[in-house]
Image 1 (cartoon, helix red, strand yellow):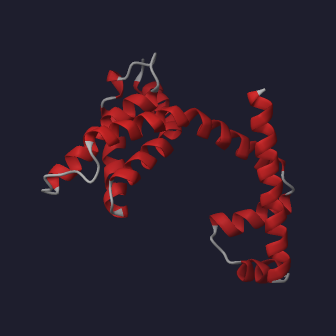
Image 2 (image 1 turned 135 degrees about the horizontal axis):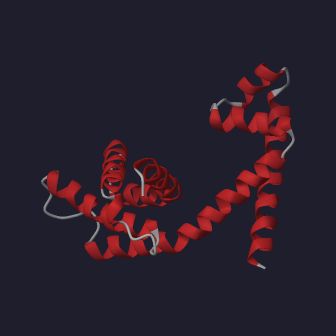
Image 3 (image 1 turned 180 degrees about the vertical axis):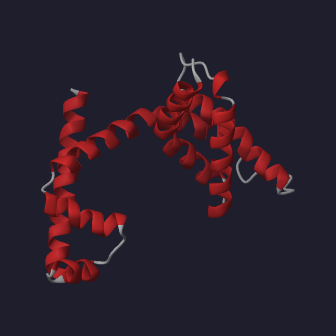
Length: 174
């Protein structure tokens, strides 16, 4: 397999697995910045060792196996004799994350589809609120409205999204 194709395949695998890996690491490592550093080191190691990955098995399982080792290494380097969590608990956490990864991916796909189906105004308001992290008052100033009206529109957009996602998941599950 050529190098460019390998990089693309790794990137696709990592994008799907990253939320699960991050959830695992952030649950196991107390400090936010420490957890970010550990996730970054895991991503680097996975990229470096991608040729060892058996594509017949779930990528997230392989990645969590490496993540568990990096979390243990993190605590060893910190000079702590005991982990905050036991090895058994870390193992059970990684197994649970692997089991839930498929459900999260289906939810994410449903959310993306439902977002695409929203009216442009609703998408723009949601972007301003959650991507740009603006308050209702700031959004209202930006769009020439009142903060109360913006809050109502955001509530309606979130409700529409939640209903759409739920319908899609039920339809897919049937």
